[in-house]
Amino acid sequence: MNLSDFEKTNYSGLYISKAAHPAFGKKYIARFQYDKKRYVKVLGYTKKDNLTKKAALTLLQKFRDSIVNTPEEEIPTQKLKNSSPIDVEKNQKLMEENKALKSILGDFKDVDPQVLKDGIQKIYDLEELKQYQIELIKLQNYLEAQNLRMIILFEGRDASGKGGAIRRITRYMNNKHYRVVALGKPTDTQKNQWFFQRYIQHFPTGGEIVLFDRSWYNRAMVEPIFGFCTKEEYEIFMEDVVNFEQDLVRQGMILIKLYFSVSKDEQKRRFDRRINDPLRQWKFSEVDMQAQDLWAEFSEKKYEMLRRTSSRAAPWHVVRSDDKHLARLEAMKIILNSVDYDGRNYALNFEADENINISVQKELMQMRKSQNY
Image 1: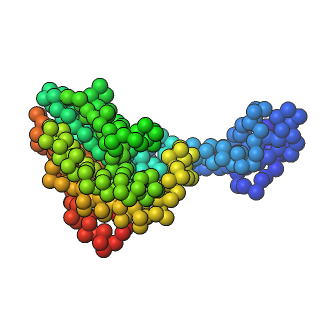
Image 2: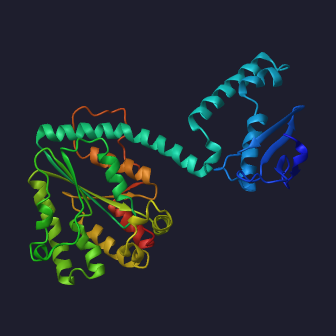
Image 3: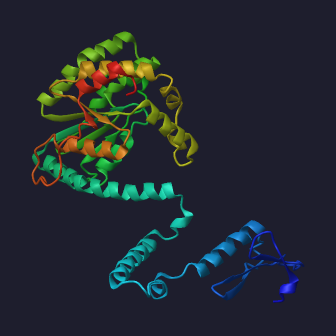
């Protein structure tokens, strides 16, 4: 390779051939000096490469990094000759840790640091949840052994985290003994039935858990706001639902009502993410588009629902869900604390986090001051 056939580019160390090969085009080479040694390498050079200057510069940088970044095992002899034994041992330990982390993280320099940080945090979060997911399996086994029935209602504004919580709660459960129910619009036949009838047909049998991703409380919030029910139908529901739930509990049903309370700013952030992320765009609907504009209307209906339908037999558990992980953790605790099941691991913390697991009274008081939730 004759260097007289190449000329400098405007990037240090990157050269390009003066003449173009008829099949391969112009040739790029990397040429630089480091630690009194000269390094030269042809960059690419196959028909499929078809290098641009930008691509060649990237290859140059990778080649330079492979030379300049001295392997960790060489550092002690080069850099620590005059160090004390303690310093050498400390630095050796740091290098070993660094090497171990690099072997796990791989090409972490090519990943957005925030994406990497979020990914690592998710691993820690998942590990924390696993201990409670083990308890949920114990709970499920107990319900089956005792032939008990459980219903868990998940309510909340759009993008409040209900679906994600359901997925974490059921992640390791025996799918033969639980069902997730998410009902769509009622049919013409269902519209003419007793309102609760279409929900009752999905109720659990002995030893089973049914998780409702939205429930009969659609009539307390969504339906009146969008005109899917009359004012009279709304009032009848609000008057009847407490007695309906008390009857369920009296007949042995374990009923847990979870309301995921997301702030207005966090809901907007999640909507924006859905719009801009191709993996989440399917989640965004026309109803979502109106959620922020109708925030005050939803707040009014939420306030009335919590005030009028939380009873001693079937209380609401309000879960602040701006932090998804903490919301999921608290939801699991609420479910686990609803039954005195066998084999409970008392080493775990089952106490409610009062910053996340909010009493109905506290939530109503907060809503009287601000409609942020």
